[in-house]
Image 1: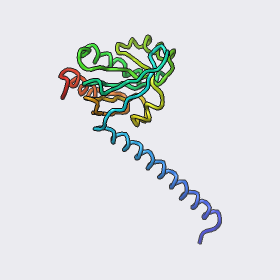
Image 2: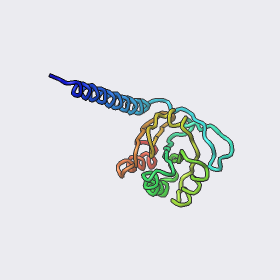
Image 3: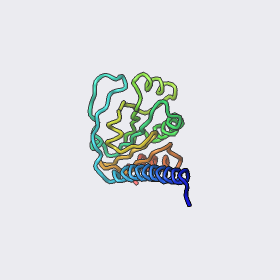
Image 4: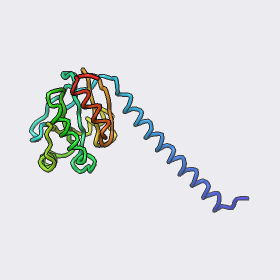
Length: 174
């Protein structure tokens, strides 16, 4: 019925299928973990100032509303998102706080800020931040209200996302 070549190919296909299934399940678990953080207390994290000198702690619980824009300088979607963030700053700079969190080096971040005319403050964070907030990629947006994670979104924010953020920052709440 099956010759050796057919059996070998069948075994290979079954193993490849199982590996693919395991990969998909791991991705689903990672994404599910990300959404699990919504509603939880926002963890404090270590950051470096833009000049790269020293480290300090960011305590999101100290702000009524704080929104983090997590980016990497080599990420094209991150670059594309900067004008949207600048618009939010122009319209709503008196409400809440918006902070850029760069995953890149100090020099790359300073150059990125100049090239893109960023109007929001930026600090440097590392992989520990990504793990602590279960962020799976850049750009990411994290909104925190009174120390509780309100929303985590991965990907370039669209107009609907920005409308949500504008509403939060204009009114101080939804």
